[in-house]
Amino acid sequence: MKLLVGFSRIFVGLLFIISGLIKLNDPVGFSFKLKDYFAPEVLNIDFLVPYALLIAVFVVVYEVMLGVMIIIGYAKKFTLWSLLLMIIFFTFLTFYSAYFNKVTDCGCFGDAIKLTPWESFTKDIILLVLILILYFGRELIKPFFTSLVRNIIIYAVFIGCLFFGNHVLDHLPVKDFRPYKIEANITKGMEYPDNSDKPIFEYHWKFTNNGETKTVITNGDFPNEKGEYEVETKLIQKGYEPPIHDFTMERDGEDYKEELLAEENLIVVVAYSISNSEKEGFIPIRKITDEAIKKGYKVIGMSASSPEVTEALVKEYDLNFDFYFCDETTLKTIIRSFPGIMELQKGTIKQKLHWNDASDLKLIKL
Image 1: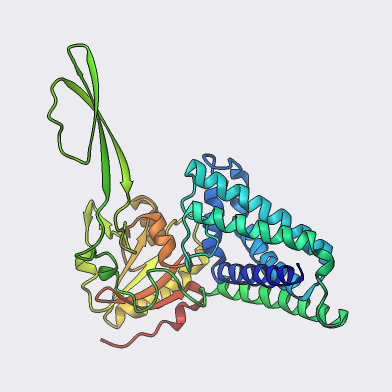
Image 2: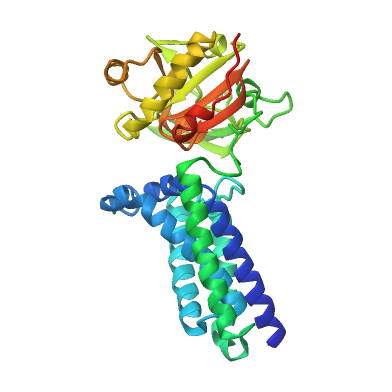
């Protein structure tokens, strides 16, 4: 029992620390996932949506703290109850998502490790068992270090988490796990390999002929049957999906992505939603994009907002470029700054910057 408690203590602690730090590296991305859970069709607590980022930061810092606390044996009773309540809540959440197919990615490990809803539920069940072992074997959990050293460690971890979280919010994630990381080529990211798996569908044909009803199941071919029919399509196996999809650069009903991704030097300003963007960010953006245009770069904007909204923004901030349409979720994935700025060379991402760092964009005279 002592060995089992010791193993559970280290395993649970490390998993909470790793999971928390991965999400703390990208709290904006985790806040998007929380908004999915808060939605009316999921938990129906959309009044929390405006506070999603604040909740995201609190949860991930708390997660890291609990991991450290259980390992060093700090505030044992409080830590065990916190772990138990947190894992019970998340086990319910992942089961609900998996069973009702509400949220297809729990976001437990951000974009670093993608888990299906049932994989997330299984992971939480394992953690629940290990935390129950810790709870019932709590007398075997002995603290490490002196009380003073434990306090110093906890305060240092807390301050470090706050500093790190503030840094990535004011700039960008330190480690980018998304398909739009620097040196990634967008065009290649949209390609399908020759040997990629194709989706498999099952077709349920319901024929009615001379008052008789017959159901035939095929994988696509039309059955050799007569009469009126209805067909229901069921996805049996999901095919390969490229890491980059739903990427467009549309304007006036035409997609210019092939042309724009072939540009030698392209500066792209990303603002998934003009109304949700930090408007003060367009001031340094305007200054650096004006400089880029003078040096010979082509500059465009990308947004999911309507043309009327983007044109109003262009006039308000005297921007010297036009906006192209792209899916909102895709733009949120590309960069965690709204607005943000990046440089593309023939579709390859060379620079990505938060609007706070727009002046750091490296430009050469072309």
